[in-house]
Length: 290
Image 1 (cartoon, rainbow, N blue to C red):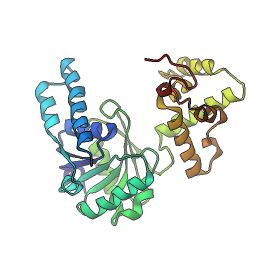
Image 2 (cartoon, helix red, strand yellow):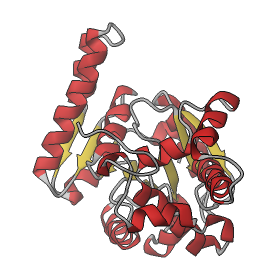
Image 3 (cartoon, rainbow, N blue to C red):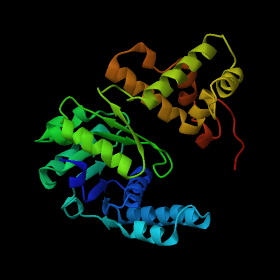
């Protein structure tokens, strides 16, 4: 398998990530089959992508003909067998739930062509979690896009201990061909690279405030002005959602057994009170109702 053998792509899952991954792949010139069990979700994905690309046309960043061609390259399917038929690369982007992903991988193993690459977009679960679901697991790996996929340049290509060199090389070059910047993660580790650095940094900020070294506001100010982050760690946690942040850290603690991942009391106190950040109107900070 080389990158030139990838002629058709299937994206499984039409949520925000799956929809935008499919459209980015189509912008790279590939025909894409986008699968969801929900026709409503597929319709929403198509409408959202059309709106996003339409704005680029209005701003002069995308040619109108190129926009129409990219939108036309995405076909939608509620039948998984039809979606994966003839696909040379399948990107799984279903809910970040281990059992759901295992079920999908089992179905892909049964339905996909024997030589098709199977890539998981999971940000928290390495492909090793699903290797026993795939008969030829040398074709399995993580290809992790960042949200929003139509904007973010980085894609983490994560080699599993089972993944062949050919599949890794083809995946790296494929990412380049769709206009994204790949980084190769040579060994599986929780959080891979960017999220691992980010959430451990957030944990350090939580502990500094919890232990009385600095105020929350000054910690955010220090990171924004000293490290040039667009948001401080407490502001970012509120944006992500404190429940989501706690879940990511809890999974890291469960998978690695390392105490540095264990959610801190300053975080869990808020989640226990239902203070989840921007979406609830209060987290580390308070937010005016819209």
